[in-house]
Amino acid sequence: MHLYLIRHGESLTNLPDVIEDGGIFDLGLTERGHAQAAALAEWLPANILPPDALYSSTLMRTRETTDPIEKALGLQAIYDDRIREIGNNLPDGRPVTSEEKISYTEYWASGRPFASSTSSINGETLLHFRTRIGIFLHDIIARHTDQTVVVVCHGFVIDTFMDTAYNVGPFRNCEVWTSNTGVTHLQYVQHPGRERWRMHYQNRVEHLRGIGGLGLTVEGMGMAE
Image (cartoon, rainbow, N blue to C red; front, side):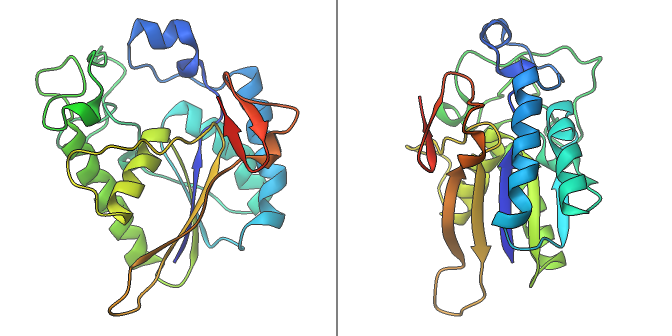
């Protein structure tokens, strides 16, 4: 299975005043985020393998990123709660509703992987989050063994895909940074006695030339803060 992971475009949740407030909000894209999504959709068809399936997180910023991608790839997206950003689901996997006003904790989830990532005493931990991402990942492996899949999701979701592929334990020492609309390509292979995952590339963003991202500039195939 060829797997393309795409982070959503710049959203209102990425803006400094929202980040500093610390809340979990289901907000859409900024004007630049929409431009990033449109540029990505134009770039994708000629630069990835023809996809068989398109999945998206159910949060607004991923839905709005997915809209032009659906048209460009000629696929109808399958929206899945399991690939929402960390803290946006409960420990049992159910999505947090708009009525449940919660905020992120002051510590980063990977620093305390067994503690709630939110202000809720029964909030989702990093290990709960990894479980739902892992369940989704192995589900699409089973469904799309010899196919190509595109997943529009979130930065920490992509981090967690990497944790699974690289078999990282509960504590990690490296953050896999993905820019808004950055594209990552992994391949799941079935070769007994060898690694199961191949990394083809991470965070391709050449489609953002002239558009940019939050505090970032395009440098070749990647982004630099």
